[in-house]
Length: 415
Image 1: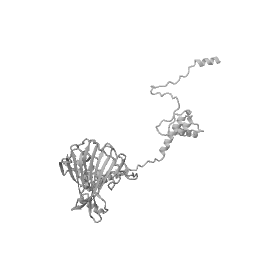
Image 2 (image 1 turned 90 degrees about the vertical axis):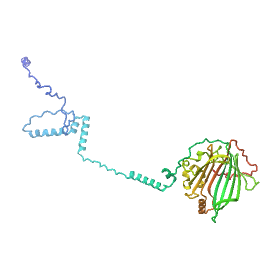
Image 3 (image 1 turned 45 degrees about the vertical axis):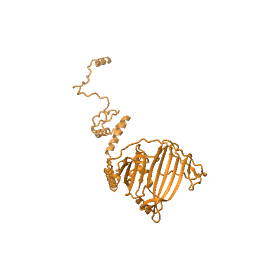
């Protein structure tokens, strides 16, 4: 019987497998994995999971119709929870992605807090500062509208025939002799003015810096507002700077000289030993109108003499280089008073004479108002006597008393 049955089974036709119909485009590819669960956001692809596909539901029976009816709703709810689906799959990447999307969904449902940007208030400083600056400049220009600086900015106060800007080569003499005269005035308690002229003659050795200095202070009375000879008194003194010491003559003739420690100075001619044209006639003074220009002879040397008359209040602005060596003149007269400035220059550009004089009456008024009995300078005159190629011989005196180390060294005085 078994053989017959085996033969029957072998000879009976077997049922044919269903063959898919239609075109290749209409035939869906076979599914290699269960369908991915869909997220609650409509249209988004569901996360891949490794969960097994649920078996197809069977037809509900009459006994369990209610339970079978509720099953699809429960299945759809579980399918809509990506976190549970990812947890069920056990895939860590799917679990992390599901947690990320769940956090994004929760954040979207929370109330959004928007930052309100406060409108920046425009500062008025950029406008106020230029206005204040312009106001200050305008006020300063108005106050100083008559000063030399402002008038020259306006193109006024310039000499149409300005002096040339020339730089002469500076000679290097071995010996320089010059003289300095300082003119002073003093007013006593009774209001009587007296003139005091301090004359200093200096012979210098440029190689060693040694000096031979002779001083003479003469006091004169005024006659019709002018100091007049004869001198009321004359005081003379001699100073020698030689080697390591300075020697000062005694007030009484024949007495020993006083020896002091020397105040060393740089060797060689210095500004103040003599000046060149460019040292005094600077950029400012070149353009100040001159009241006189003459050719003359001073101490047998042909020179060109320039003379200016400048308000005292404008002297420093007009002739800073010529005024600087005589700063003691500052404030000794009314700013509106006139200062006479004279400079004589030889053919080599060497300044032979520099003379600066304040208005004497204005200085007397200033000294009278001060009423302190002090001497107030009103003028200086510096004359260059000679420039020698041979160094002068300056020797220390032989009649010298014991040195006084505590005494201050004598100054040469003047410019």
